[in-house]
Image (tube, rainbow, N blue to C red):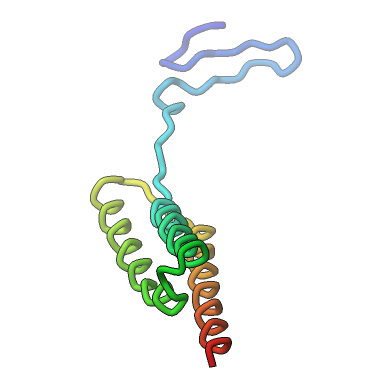
Length: 118
């Protein structure tokens, strides 16, 4: 191994000589996935509401579905905070898909309850 211009020169009998990247190029940047926190909080929140509905009958499915704007509000807050706090962020497409599925599930359960009640 030899040192050249901040890079390490690796010598291998089979591959010949090649430059290993220096420490500066090996740094990794952390990328925040927007939507991950919101998805987790929504799963917890909706899970608690569904649990309270099924075990204690405290909420109707229509009431649970009426909380859907909180998903958009929490996602908007997370986007704004990510833009402010992180230089690198991407949107969590899987998290957004799961939130859409959760909203559709809550809507379907509300409709089922309404049909059964009539």
